[in-house]
Amino acid sequence: MSKLKEIRELKNLTQEELAESSGISVRTIQRIEAGTIPKGYTLRTLSQTLGIEENILQNIPEEAIAIPEQPTEKQFIEEKAEEVLINYSFIKIINLSSIPFILFPPLNILLPIILMFKLKQKNNVAKQIITLQIIWTISAPIIFMLWIFLKLRGNYTLGILIIIVLSNVFMIIRNAIEIDRKQKLHYKLNFNMI
Image 1 (cartoon, rainbow, N blue to C red):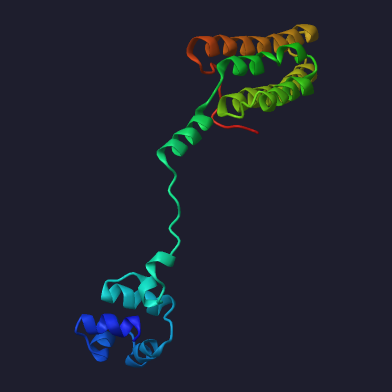
Image 2 (image 1 turned 90 degrees about the horizontal axis):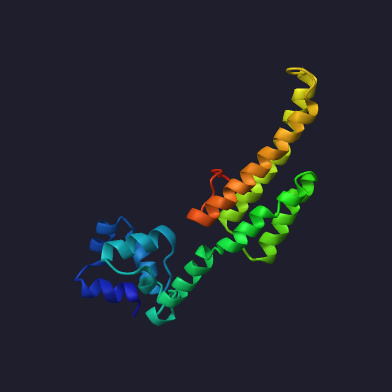
C-alpha cells in the first residue's frame, strides 16, 4: 500500500475529497497511489494538504534523511575565538613596520602585508593599517605633483615633501599610541582594500 493511500485512509478522505481540497486531479492521486513518486508542486501541495512532511510521500524513511550536524557549543566558541583573536602587540608591530620604508613606498605596504601573514593577524585591524598605507602611497605623489605643477606659494618643494612624509609618520605613531591605550586605531577607514 502506498503512503499516500495509507495517510488518506487514516484521515477518512476519498480520492475525490483529497483532489478537491488539494487542487490535484483524481487521476494524479490514483497514479501516486499506484506507485508513482510525487515531485515538485504536487509533492508540496499534497504534503501541505495532509499536514505531513514531503519525504513521507516519497517513501523515504525518516532515518534515511541526512540531518546536518549542528556544531557543538565548544566548536562554535573555538571558531569565534579564532575570528576575534587579535594580538595587539603584533598589530602594533605591523603598524610600525611601515616607518623604516616610508621613503620607499612599495615596501611600506609590502612589509606589513608579509608580517600580517607571518604573524597570522588576518583581521580587520591589520587590513585597515595596510589600507591606510595604500591610500597614503597613492595620495602622497598626487599631492606632491599638484604642488609642483601649481607652484603654490613659491618654491618649497623640499618642504612639502618633508610635510608629506611626516604626516605618514604622525599617522603611524598616533595609531600605535591608540593601539596601546584603547586597542583600536585612531585613523581608520570603513573599508579594506585587501
